Length: 284
Ligand SMILES: Nc1ncnc2c1ncn2[C@@H]1O[C@H](COP(=O)(O)OP(=O)(O)OP(=O)(O)O)[C@@H](O)[C@H]1O
Ligand SMILES: [Mg+2]
Image (spheres, protein in one colour):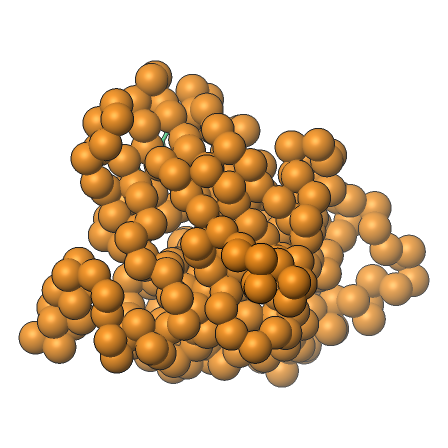
């Protein structure tokens, strides 16, 4: 599967849940908003009551323990969830104010790009991989491809390292370079929202720093949802924080949001015992 794309704005503060109050709504439309979002599998809930707001040109860090439903939640935001057999979605996802269920799924995935935890490469060269989404969508005239290729690889901080070997196999790159190539592929179709699922979990500190720098840069023109297990990473790059964990409720345990707000503020003064414990465990 391709990193199809997903996007983002400015605005002063509050970015995530709870769902917009009148004053927030007056400030503008969120890049992504979920309303009472739930996911079930064979009648069992996986996610429940997710009300989330992601502002344009901001980074929202989504944290929570393994199995809480972070990847499942990301996949709801660009209709990738529909490709997983047996999962059912309830509630609503709005992309810049418009319900994604009423839009063409491919168009949604171009606007909401996704980067997976492990780099997913296609057979072929570095250039083939970077341009895959663009060619697949027939979005750009052929003559513009070299320029788009350089721009996307530049945005992903990879151009200088690969400009002399664009036609070599993508598989010859290091894992850190492969992850940035996947980022370039997602960026090439110019998504308005970018979903990053633990993009640095397989990377060394230097590659991690390069990706984090890119995230801040990319967020100047797009909305980003960053799944991370590192509160340190959230502190370094995120404007907003959303915490997800499994909680008991109707139908059984399911992922629920339990803390959302400005990232630095919540990390300094957590409002929930769960986040306080998470912070303690990172300090230990
Ligand atoms: N296609 C599926 N069919 C059935 N259950 C699923 C499916 N996808 C996810 N789940 C279940 O949903 C729950 C949440 O999974 P998910 O992968 O979203 O967690 P996560 O928070 O991303 O975890 P991790 O941090 O380990 O990546 C898990 O119990 C998982 O088994
Ligand atoms: Mg996951």
